[in-house]
Length: 371
Image (cartoon, rainbow, N blue to C red; front, side):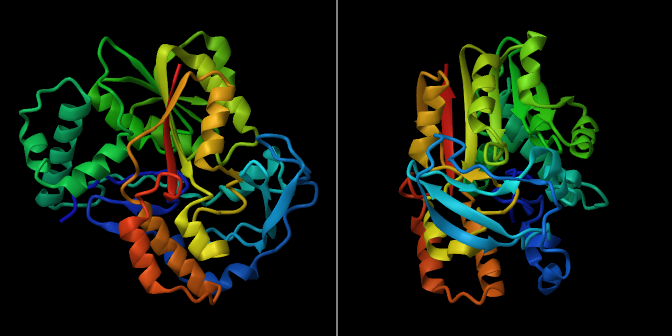
């Protein structure tokens, strides 16, 4: 029995969702019909490509080839992509899609499909589980008493509480009407639960369909770039970026904007795939975290920390690690079978149980940066 919330985990998990019932793969990750992925055009539209020639993070032109002829084997987006590794450690696509053509990579993306926990389900047990989860979230992350039945019950299931804590991004309690911004909020599920806990919430989203899904949950959504919020005068005590920074053309600009939107003493929670992960070392081009062409760059833990400090954050620390990085490994195994890569299952088992011990090698980088 699993008490986990359905979780976005933005893009590192992509369409791998933790639902109210079980950890499962959505249709794209099942890769049924994946052999037909090549039936579409391999070429990105003419004029929709830009050549960088240098790292988008440190601007160095010193690099080495990491992977070439990468395909989008998850959603069938056209194009063959090359990933380079900068001397600073960052991996990045070059050439890459132009910003005004990136929508082509998101037309069938999972954040456009709202999946309510109880949609189409008549089971009282499922609804009871959802109620218990809400009570846990309200008790631990809100202002409700921790003597609630749901909180007390879930404390007996550490694996489930760890997953819920990761979903809630370990945010503090929302004393005094504090404001929280989720950059790239997708379908708004996290914001809805943060609002339930007592936060005054807002999200930013570039895609109108995803924004509409979030608004249907009763949360405020700004349709546009987070940089465009700077002129509004609104400021936040907490900002979260869950698997967003790997998608943006200018990661330095978005972190600088986030820093400016925080009040003194505010905090930014960031999670993104780790290019130094053991999973990438094992699976290579089949690693789920690559996800071309949506993931424009992938960080190391140290390089992301240095970038946060460069834009003005004073204290950057590891946040509690994500307990479900192993789901990425399972998805990578499916991709490896497509590529006829021979992967030692014993190594996968080792990664599942020991791969989280070294923060430099975990599947995800999870940081908390404070002003």
